[in-house]
Amino acid sequence: MLTNKETALLDAATDLIREKGMIALNMSDVHKKAGYSRAAQYQSFSDKNSLLAALCMRELVQNTLALEEQRYKELSGDFTVVLRPVVYNYLKLSDRLMIDSAFTNMLKCVEALPDVEEFSFLKQGFAYLDKERRAEKDA
Image (cartoon, rainbow, N blue to C red; front, top):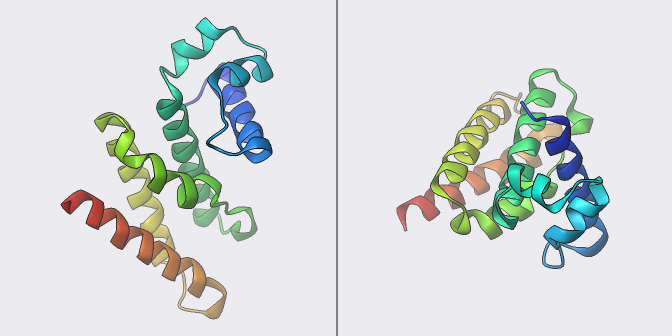
């Protein structure tokens, strides 16, 4: 469960990435936008990669809940689809394992969706991401 501070920092990072892009994300901007000190930020996220991993993790969990509760219009792929493949190999093992577990849970929900046109793009996309993820592990 995320603390209020962690949620505020992740929300600030999300806004900054949407405004400036992931490459331009600066940790100093995140804590300032969230209204916390630099030290407070680093207590929660030791570096940019741990922050990015937390963004991916939060989105995977939110998406899994949305699928389970059939809130399909709330699905988002900002970090899961775009960010995870870019930063995955730079993450600590613990972050990779956490993301893999959350991705596997979401994949199960996606695979359980009915085989109808409404979900075909989502199912194909996650099948591709899973194939890519397995190839990364085997490399």
